[in-house]
Image (cartoon, rainbow, N blue to C red):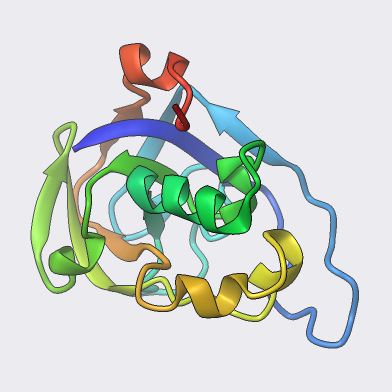
Length: 161
């Protein structure tokens, strides 16, 4: 699995905002991030969110992102708009639900699909929530401490060709 992008945000733009406008907390793109077992990504909005939280880190497939851009006809769409932490080269993240796997030496356990919500229609575009059903990414527990780094060769290359 190749790590293309790392994103964190210090605050929630959508959580708890039903019926309100989203917040405007910046999404930071990082070259590396610290994973803390059972707690999350240091500096992210979900760090120490609650014990056993299923989304200590979220992954999204670069391949699904490319298909989303084609469907949306938006080649300039930024992968950070998905509000997932890690964009990876892996075709079917749903196969990792219930599985332990290693990413750059950090042990993770896939807990569930990162199901899209209606906010995706605002963040991505109309119909995005429906289009992303079944391919919204993967929520994970972090099982071991460690650091993740963007793959230098692929991170510099565009996600879209």
